[in-house]
Amino acid sequence: MVYGDSVYIDAAGRELGPHPSEPFNFSKLFTTWENPIVQPSCFFRKSVYEKFGGLDEAFDFALDFEYWLRICEAVQFFHIPICLSDVRLHPGAKTWRLEAVQGRDLIRIGLQLIDKGVPMRHGVTERDASKGLYLRAANHLRNAGERAEAIKIFWTYCRGAMPFPFSVLRLAKFWGGVYVRDALIKKQKPQNHQPEAGSKATSGS
Image (tube, rainbow, N blue to C red; front, side, top):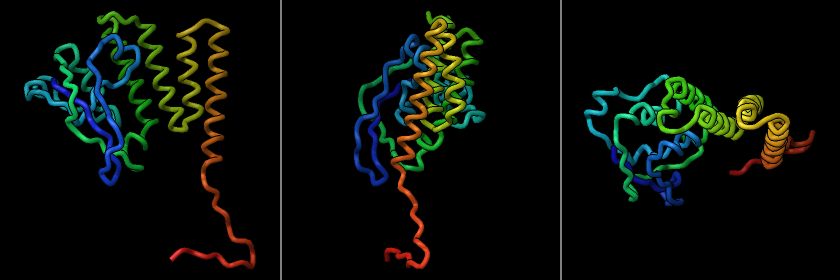
């Protein structure tokens, strides 16, 4: 597989900034669970598709990431540091709308690979792979506003990452951060003021 970088653009096609891919690194991949490949900038041979099939539509978001992980032990990855595509950002973009789904998909994919021993074959311990997986998933769920689910997944991360009582203290810090974030977002949202009784509501033309 050959893949390159991309550029973010807005809904009107204006350039916003770089969106680079990264060299494929097994150790980093299985400890951070970050997708190193910008999907629109990747190209692979027909023989890869014939051998491994296409995307797994059982996943709602991380279909491309699951595919890279499915083929990673049989295919060589080559990163070319040049821009090969544009990625459009807009309010209806899947990346923004489905971050909770992204977190849940990531847990399913990661646990399947850990169960098969894939990270361990590349020098990553089961503990480190699990820690990185739950931490990243919890952050996705937090960003999506899934407060209770994010805290539950983060607690799973804490129990595996550190001993008691540090795990409890780390959870408390995350918990507090979630509530502060939600409060700030709520404060920034415009309030819908209803006209008082007897007054006229006006509208722009």
